[in-house]
Image (cartoon, rainbow, N blue to C red; front, side, top):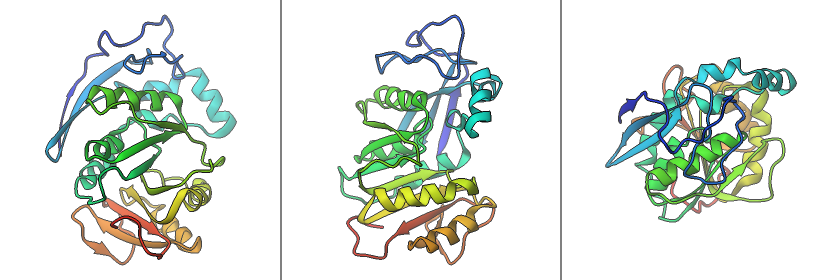
Length: 257
């Protein structure tokens, strides 16, 4: 996958405000972006035969200096990770191009962030629902989908500790297993929101926490298979190398794995 970027701030589609905030008031229109610390930049990603153009925060580090972010961090360990483009998202978006799920399959993306992985799935013809804890991230996912002529997808503001009563045949996520304290609520959520016979794909860069999540998933009754970026299967989690953790319940599948 190749990428190119434009480091200029957001275009005329960006809403104006005198005091940029990491928790901005969101425009009612999905084709308008709020003002944020550091502004927005455009970046292109060449994913298979598709070229996706995404807006993303120009300098996500500026969010860390925001007083409201610091208050939320003190209250519940909140961090604005949605604003960063994590390297594994690029490889996960490429992996999505090789899927053979039936067109129209409903897919829930966990921790969508700027939406690259979900947009790659949307461009492949899947019915993607974007979820994130941060409302600004969800607004951005809709903006980026519209920017690429992919409609205005459904979004869910999702707290992993407050799981909605809804299931999906496919769950996907990327770089969301980095924190050991979130393994338990994440696995409980997957257990509740994954439809019978469904599959969950989680992209991971081979972080230190990978083996611990792998073991916890098995304790929760999941079968877990490991695949690298080239499609090779591995018997154990990888270290410092991109991998996809494929979780299912070892029952007849409703989608190709």
